[in-house]
Length: 161
Image 1 (cartoon, rainbow, N blue to C red):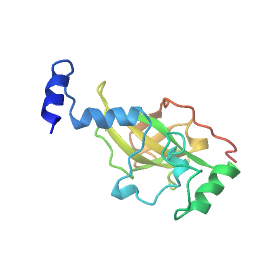
Image 2 (image 1 turned 90 degrees about the vertical axis):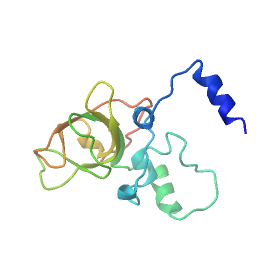
Image 3 (image 1 turned 180 degrees about the horizontal axis):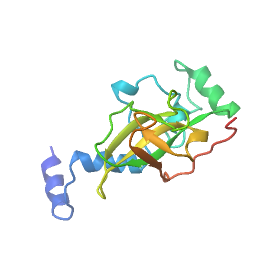
């Protein structure tokens, strides 16, 4: 009932932002968005859900709880989510990421991405921990390069062996 009044009051002081800006801000915040293409691809810790309050270890039972809890308490994750940046068109969710030294085996996957105001695109990618520091390419080992950036929160890498 009060939505129009609230919107009028806010628009007197703030500029509205379209959905593309919100998508980019969500990427910058390090909050993954699961799409149909990435459904059932990740254990929650692989995409940092426990770091952004997206999973609780104090609640009751849920499907897959044993795997999620084991990953949390054993600390043997080999994959984590990182902020990435690339040039060109915004990649679709589930686009694979490769290292030049291993052209046959993807080392990660785009979780979600959005156009960046400074040009190119920014995205969140689930990557092998040992791949996050090296050269990465989108779609194939010879694809367009992507670089890893920093998330606004610390990412514990634990035992990456």
